[in-house]
Length: 321
Image (cartoon, rainbow, N blue to C red; front, side, top):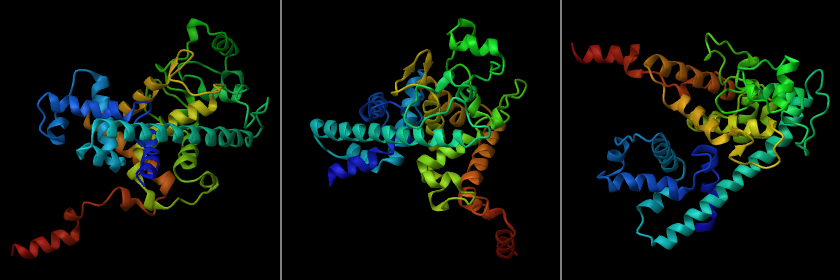
């Protein structure tokens, strides 16, 4: 039963918690803060570090506690070190297995979606063989191309394929598929960001079902926005891998750092620098919820402030007469 729990809860880690870190490393960041004087998790929440990676790791710890109840149970137990190490290793094994399953599913699905285009990509994008994807193919290359470069320019395409230093492919640029219709405005770089159509299909493929990607009707809101925010950042990373020509997943792919790409997305969503930026992220997540779960269920993921509505105001007025 314990092993089954490890497998079940472990599958959520790569999807909703962190991209590469092991459970024991995420927990170690919490323990480090306890060692610095935090009495409990609430105290640890207040202990920001000057090291960005330590702060990211602690935010991953918080997600681990939320999405993996078994990890919280283990942390609060009096289990021996060997028992914890074994349980953590099983969670890690299951989490990496889930990433492999998701990658395999998207590899097939992305090929189908792109081959449904009119005109169809030429050369064709095969479901099994990824060697013809990436920048070797004009369609996948255009989706992967950094928005800072003009993929429609033959010189730029040739330069990218030749690994010319003037057109490096790194995580310093957003790839085109992140933007709505691939449109990037350098004067307003937030416009359309994280609204690419393939992102919605990839999210549904991983978090609801592959068949839901073809449906106009929203999926069951019971699985609503509670897992949407974390899931979106994983979806973008998984989609990039599916579009690439890489046969196996790795953190560093040529000059592109997948961990840095993931961190950039997480920081953009989780660390808005101003109230205005926070409102933009809130609106973006509302847009995602409406795309995935439908407009009818809006109160599920953005509840009304009932205490400020007319019924509450009427009752309050009566009480104070």
